[in-house]
Image (cartoon, rainbow, N blue to C red; front, side, top):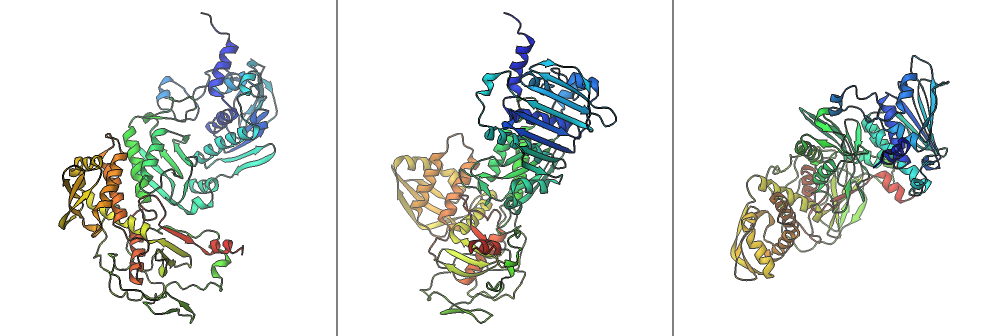
Length: 611
């Protein structure tokens, strides 16, 4: 055994702290923020390996502190050992500057607001003298030839462009957490990021784009030891990866597995498999209730009450996402353009939908042919159009009856009963409902997907209230199926009874169905049982019962919904739109697919090349 030389020990430690240029940039910017900077400038050359420059207007350092800051485990952020258990700063270990100095040529120039400027240099661990310098208040840190002292590390780096993108992303995540601070990043002389100081919503919109700003809902939650706020994208706004999930705890950007899992659970019932939500969420929690010293990069945390934090986040997100379809829609910059008033596309919002005939005559005298009337079809169980009502809380049953009047009374233009999804204009391909929103935008609704969500929420409401109401079959039905599926269903008969599905075994490879959920009408029981058996087979024995029941509800909702190809009359179309506006999470179906699309004036202008 032998003690390692200090230089070797420093380079080993540097490998943990400074794994790539982005890590060095992150540590230096965090130091600037801890110093109270209001403006941080970062310049990168050669992907950060040739040169990194970080300048700030923070508190600066005295000559004595400057000489001490490049020594390992020297920090101003831990006045005593007890502070380690209630850390309120980004940095606290005192390892960043000595680690960077051990593998590069480091130069630091600093000036306190009421003092003189001084500088110090470090080259591969060799420390120079503190000398007088000229500089404005704040600190300037320049890193040249990163990893020149450890050539083997350079071989594992990616291309300069890739390394620079990682460094910009590190600053971008810190910019989310510190919106009141201005940031500017240049890469080889080109501006990659330029953000003035702003509030959280403005900063999130600047970093995540206009699409997110118009498709996000505010998230708020407050408990005695936790405050959560931020913005969450609607289920219709999603990504192929989780890269745009920005989670901030006590001003620290993190990638904590617990928080990301809570985000997934909150979106589980409204997002398609393989897609990821977009969110910018900020949690404030007492420093003593969270341990940040559990990961080398400080991106993972340990919460004292992990279950409470997880539950609070899920509850806040679900409350924010539990809005009706179209609620909160805002007009984009395109929609506010002159194209919105284009006389070539006259608005017919608020004009009554004709009840039949060979053509549609609008109030402006123009005519549009309609399909020839077909055979009469029984009315579907949509709620009748009614004056606008607030969005129901999750799992609340819609008030009023479920019957549709034979003829919907026309409503005057601009009536309060006309919600954000507008008035139906026509049914396309017996599958899609075309409507015009109050602002003239076109709304295209997938009738099956929309009604599937309505049925899902009604079934869930009954389940939470004590059990789904069942409708006994006049004659019990026998369904033949593989023996394994029959055994699986029979083993879950008690749980399925809560869903309004009363079954019992009927010999090997058969199930006797005595009742079905009343909301489904009179569907064939065979496909329903086959789908539920397949759903149950996908879950392990350890899967929570609530999750199994919710998955089964989604399957039932699909079978109990109006199908593509089902012709709807104008009253039914209008009722479907109103129910969508009043039903939580109605922007997506039970499988996470969108229930409606919105084409504003700007979208149409772009499609026709008029921009």
